[in-house]
Length: 175
Image: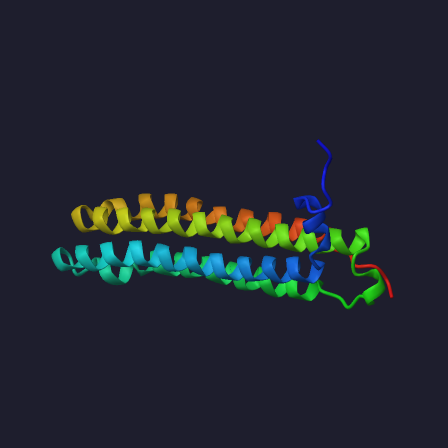
């Protein structure tokens, strides 16, 4: 069977690297905010429910909501870093291999950061939920579960680090 010129590989090469870059930046911030919102939803609903039985846990367990919000901030920071990687390229060089590589690097970086932060937001939200429920039952468990929540929050930082390393590959051709 002969390969046709309308294959997926041909389509990917014909899409502008700036389009890939823009999609990567949008995924970085959008999916990170989705992860933060989902984590806040999970933590907040358990926190409010458990605070009915033990009102003392409300202020202490807000740290879980703050950890979830940090996930969105990670996405914003990486989106700003990725935005600064964009450079103007003459139209004659827009489909050069160097331009395509830069577009793909920014796209991959945005996907990595976005989905790492989505998982991190879910992780921190679930741990924060269990922290609130456990703290309502036994206040000595708060610090122990908070340590686990800090390790869960590190997942987002790992995604940011990998995203920054990936975006270092984004070099556009000289004018």
